Length: 508
Image (cartoon, rainbow, N blue to C red; front, side, top):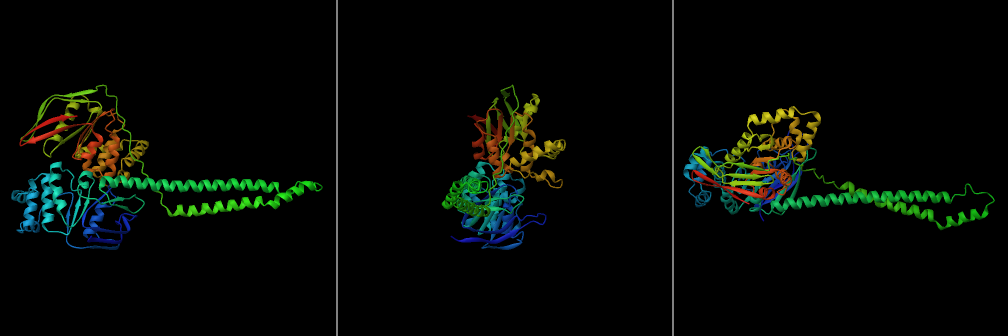
């Protein structure tokens, strides 16, 4: 198998950080696709930047063979070299153009394209240069299943070395059987777990390995404690025997008592106990040396309970309506939502999913139910951010301490809340909004594309929080992430769009 990227003893840290991101990292990448996953801030994008050479390592070396193409999360447009490559007249680029459904008009007017169309055009531009190495950062953010299905065959056909940062388990599983999970705390450099499995299986395997390592550490620690306790008991027994073997206190004329002591001394029982104690202590010291060479895996405290409110109205109805977005019309039948329903709303981009949940949120507000609704939008406006941070500033010190703990248990590093100069990421804002609301007795949760800005760790946490079997609240989720919806929802609504008309249908 050809080696495309060779990394040896790599070290890197940002100037403002006292702890390196990477230290003495050695790694190789080969032909085929490798998925990189991990929590936000663990160093995934930094590793890609180091491979591309846009940042320089503090030490070690990186050697890449061949041209590198990079697809960032946000489409940055085409330059003249991209256009020249796309129209180089090669059969291969013509085939790619056709597979990705790209027209000349789309190439000429990229600014008017949808997110999915821009992603397809970005991929065409990258592959038109015929790179040996293709790097992609979260390629499926905001993409519907239709667009993913167009991209997957193209990426499967790529014959070079592909590296993809992704938390989309189904998409990653369709392409790769090698996963690198990066884990990092604020106190230590990143550790990499290179697992020859697809992303979903690698997550399970990594969790199993950590639990086994934790169990081995705890077992060895318990064994040392037991040996030390046994040595202490023997010492007490030996001390008691030493007292019995002492002739002090025996009458000088009590010859039989003295003879009994002499006989006991000849048996050497006191020396035997001391020998046993020394062997036990030597064993304990040997195990302690083993333990000091091990690192106790930290099992992060994750997950929160959601405190649903007492919503006496167990059934909510929404009248039939035609929702309009520009020239598009979405036909919505009468909707009935019951407490305990966990509803997945799916459909292609542009079909009106956000239009629908905004309508439902508006109707609930008009009915005076907004106090029991937690609505987390796809993107936060400046007003949304101001509302959230105003609420944070009004908390007591104890409440802020609890909030920091909740954020940590949601997979965030809550330090962003303590730094006035740091702008929170969209994912951090979603976690903060949820953490602030979870004790307010909300009984209806509406989330629009929650996984777009959540890392793989946080997604797992929210899947456990939103158990599909929990009937204490109503959950309405808009998402293209099938694995997330399967884990959290027990019914589904789908919107089908045909030209300028769309229809909502419901399944259980």
